[in-house]
Amino acid sequence: MINRERYIKQIREFYDCDLIKIITGIRRCGKSIILNQIMEEIKQKTNNIIYLNFEDINTQRQIYDDITLLKYIEENTDKQNKYYLFFDEIQTIENWQVACKTLRLYNYSIFITGSNSKLLSSEFVKELSGRYVAFRVRPFVYKEIVEYCNQLNKEPNIMDYLIYGGFPKRFEFESKDAQLRYLNDLDDTIVINDLVRRYKIRKENLFKQFVNYVLRSNARVFSVKSIHDYIKNNYASCSINTIMNYLKYLEDAYIIESVKQYSTKTKKELEYYVKIYNEDVSLNSIRCLDNKFDITHNLENVIYNELKFMGYQVNVFNNAGKEIDFLAQKNNKQYYIQVAYSVAEEKAYNREFDAFKNLDNLSQKIIITNDEIDYSTSTVKHIKLKDFLQMENLDDIISL
Image 1 (spheres, rainbow, N blue to C red):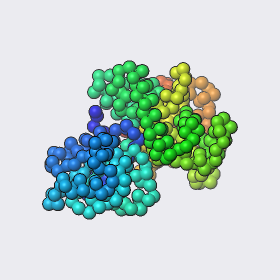
Image 2: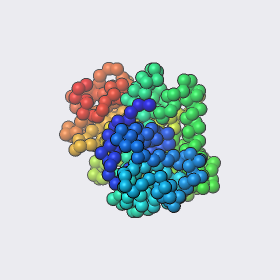
Image 3: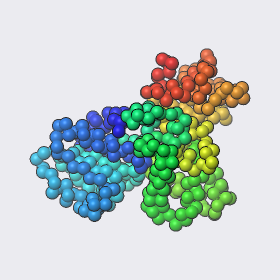
Image 4: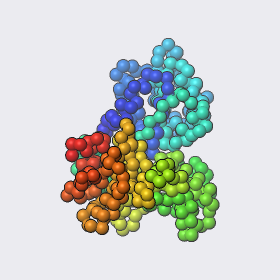
């Protein structure tokens, strides 16, 4: 497995502090691997390490709440030496936050992972306020896929990425059938185990239809009402509050992110309309029939995921009624970005470049496409997809 240094270097300076280090993200995005890589680094200086994987049934039987966890740690450490505690998928433990808050009072450095953003819900934030630092991990972006494929002696492929995404484990399987089986099983685990069972959803079929609709509709503008109307008209009656809850469940499990539009006219975010992006584009593709994959929207979704990996704050931008796919901001720099599979045809060219009209030149305007021809103008920089996917950040456009 590759060393995911971009994440580890963010965590490294907190190794010895008393803040609780929370590593979150969707299931199977590589959190446990990062936890193990951190442990290996710390083992270079000490063996005072305790690792507990709470997905292991043997661990669950022995340690199931704050009391049993505190007892286990007390029996396996001493107060004289500093210990490093690693708790994998800790959200399964009742009152885990109480245990962590207690342990940090002593000579422990605590690292925890979890697949549910309830780890950072308001009730837990209140209890852990000022006592934690959080790190979000995502499935592989293309640069990481290239590195991992090189380890596996496989040839990386951009189209494969646009269809089947970046869940790390799938690259270990040789056949596409095996990869699809893995992705479908993972999807079942996330939707059924992590959501239907956790939230005791009674209308399971309705919820599954909702999930299918949302995940097939990535990179599109929605309102809660529009989703509600679609589900009501095509499947079964439900309330707007139900749809709001369902969306929150998907976000809590890091399955989707909803991104608000920013309007030039009102100079603020528009509350009612959002774009929804999947954490991994495979969540769209496994729902497609007869290999009719949604490459256009998956491409935009991939660009969004890459921008977030680079550390950008990302909004959809409403330019006086014309949508610009992304406003990306970091370090007091901002970039307007349009994404299209191709602008070779005049109609597509005009549509994508016209979105930038009437914007000042204080910020860089970028269009990303899969075209080989350079379509840059005096005011808009064209970046080829294959080049963008190898960039560390948008400042690299200077060298292109």
